[in-house]
Image (cartoon, rainbow, N blue to C red; front, side, top):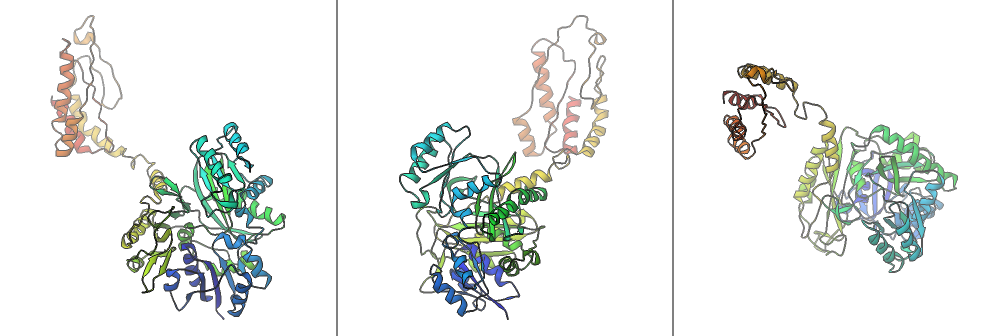
Length: 562
C-alpha cells in the first residue's frame, strides 16, 4: 500500500519537500499543514493542504493515526523545539526530525557553543552574557574581534548581528538584553569572534549513528546585491559549491558532522533527522557558525532538485535507524540555482494581498520550478502574496551559468507589485569557476603559438632597422648599444618615454591601426630632438589582453617604416 506522508510547514522549503516526497513511487499522497497556494495547486490528486493545528500535538497525533500517516517530515524549527517529534513518536507516528532535546543544537546558541567546545568541533571563540555592561566590556576588551552578537534562543533567523564596529555590536547587545527586541530569545546573548572567509551550508541525514551529506550549498542572507543591505532569512541559494572540493567535504564530515552526531548520542539525545551545518571556510579550515535542526530555506529549494534517489526512503530509513540501507544520491555534474522573490519592505513590514501572475509561464520552462512560500488563494481563487518571502524560482542545468540564466528567465515571467529580488545569486561561484577555468596561459590571453607567429612575421622588419652599434635581437628582452661604433667618443645620453592612449582608443574604435606606430615614434623622437639629441634606437613595448597577430603586425610594420 502506498505511503501517506505529512509535511509540517507552509513555506518554500515545505513546498519543495512535498514535491520531492511526492515524486516517490512509494508515496500515495502528501499532506501539507498548513501549506500554501502552491501546495494546494501543485497536484491536487496527490498533494493536499491539511487543516490541522500542528501545535496541538494530541490532536495532530489523532489526525495522523486516523489517516494512517506513515511519515511526518517537519520543515521549520519551532515545532521541533516544542517537541512535535517527541509527541508523535510516543504514539507510534514516525517523525523525521529530532527530539526537543536534540533540537537544542539550534534552539539554544548557548547549548550549541558549549556542546561544540566540549567535543572539539571547530567554532569561533565566544563568551555568553545576560548582563549588558559585562557584554559591552567584553566587546571593548576581547583579544579578538568580538563583533558577532547572537540571541541565544530562536528569533526566526533574524537574531544574529554581524557588526562592523564595536559601537554597533554594543548597540545590538542593548537591543537584545535591554529592549527585548527578540523577547525571551534574547535574554542571553552569545558574543563571537568575527571569522573571515566564505560561508557555505552542509545538510546531513542522520539516523542517530550514521550520516549522509547532501551537496554543499551557499545561501545569500543580505537583501541587496553585493551582500549589502539588511539581513534576511535568505534570498537565494545555489548548489553544489565549486569552491568546496570533495576533500573538503570529507574533512567537514570527519571534523564536524560526525562528531556532532556522536556527541549528541553520547549525551543521551540521539539525533534523527536533517542536521544543517552553517560553516565559514577560513584559511585555517572550516568553522561552524551555527547548527540548525532542519532543512534550510532557501537552500532546500536548490539542493533537493539535484537528488536522484528517493527522499521518502532515505527519511524513513533515518527514522527506522538504518540509513545505510537507503543512502541518498545526487546529480553532481549539474547545478541548481534558486532565486527568492520577496515583498516590498521585506525584511521589515510589507503589504499583503498583491496579485501574482506568470507562475505557470515560469513552470513551463524546462528545468524550472516555482516553490511557493508567502502565497495564498484569494476569495476569487487568485494567487496573492501573504508573506515577506513570496516565491523561490529554482532551475537545474548542466552548468552554473545555464542554471542562473534559467532561474532568472523564470523570475522574469513572474509579476506582482513591489517585487524585489537579488540579481547576483551565485556570482561568487561563477567567479570561482571562471578562475578555475582561466588558469591556463591560452585562456588568459597568452597564446604561445600566436606569439611565435608574430615574431616570425616581424623579424625581417626589425632586422631592416639595424644600425651600427645596435646588437639587440628580436625577442631577447634586452640588448646593448655601442656608442663608439656609432662614432661617439664621450656621449651624453638622453632618454624619453611616451605612449599612445586616446589615439589607440580611436584606432580600436575605427579598426585602423596603421597610424598608431607613426604617432608613437613621432612623439618619442620629438622628445629626444627637443633636447638637441640624435635618436639612436627605439625600444618598443607592445601589450594586449589577447594577441591578435594581424593587428600587432600592422602596428609594428609602421614603427619600422617610420
